Amino acid sequence: MKKNQHGSAAVGILIAIVALFVLIGAVFGVSYISAYNAGNTMEQGIKATHQNNQNILATYSQKVLEAAQVTDMMRDDLVRVTKAAIEGRYGADGSKAVFQAITETNPQVSEKLYLKLQQIVESGRDEFKVNQTTLIDKKRVYQQELGSFWRGMWMRIAGYPKINLDDYKVVITEGVEATFKSGKESAPIRLRASQQ
Image 1 (tube, helix red, strand yellow):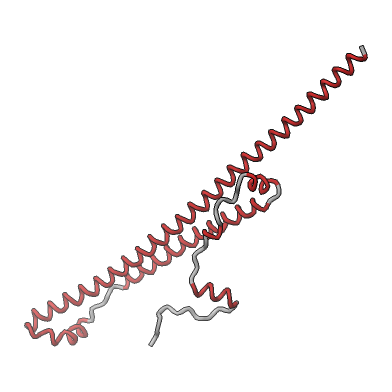
Image 2 (cartoon, one colour):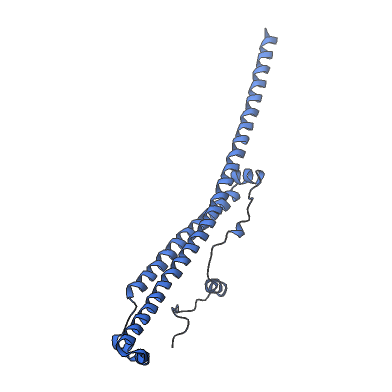
């Protein structure tokens, strides 16, 4: 009977050891799959956010250019209408009096167009900033995960990072880059290139 008890104890220990290895294997397998999926999710999120940044900037730039054309069109139309009115009033040579008539009528481009243009610029910049901040945060989270012990180890085993994070830069102006390199900011911000 003692021999039988030793045999069943050995079988029990063997089963426990096998169960332990199966459990460890399952933990490793789940950790690998989890890290692989997390790496893929984070990289795809970074790529999508970067592409969305391009989309936002392109759309915003086009909106500004198109809105600026409206003010140019309005100005050109005002000049054309004023010129036609002068020619109708003063005859074919009335164009000599265009400057005088323009001064008399003082045609103006509506300030509402400039306000609209300003709103487009502000809202476009705000949307771009939000998405740039999202990209910064996604990169931070990804780098944090890569640097963590357990998940980072499994992500590296799974082959991450698969993208070069330096390819997904935040867009800044040359002036900002120079300011951060020098540590000094020049002020004030100039709204017009040259003021006379």
